[in-house]
Image (cartoon, rainbow, N blue to C red; front, side):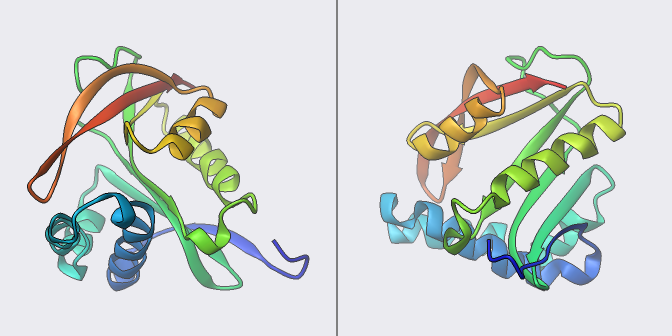
Length: 175
């Protein structure tokens, strides 16, 4: 990060639906397009990152979005959601880290570390004791990042990207 850059992390509001649709589609595409069929990416992006879909998620009381901004420009975000938990996640009082993305232009500048720290603070503040996530088995960069933050493998589940059934590694950490 440049010395004059100001990093802020804020909670998203319903007014951020279009921003999150754009940021979510862009960061997901940056991360996975090279390793997936265009038709599968297109189908997933269309259903997961429309402004309407983001507005629905933002209105869900079980969901919290955190947006990272540098000098007022969104460069990353995280989505936390309470609710159903796979049987492989055994930690007490769990919450899911559903999405965690930083724009590729900002990789390696400490943005992910700042965002993860804020996610941990948010989950502790809300008295959750376990943070869990699913990460694509072929996303070695993300898996290494999560291991650095003391997440460990607890199982697997299927993630559907368009018509492609993919294997995600389930990881959790205690808080």
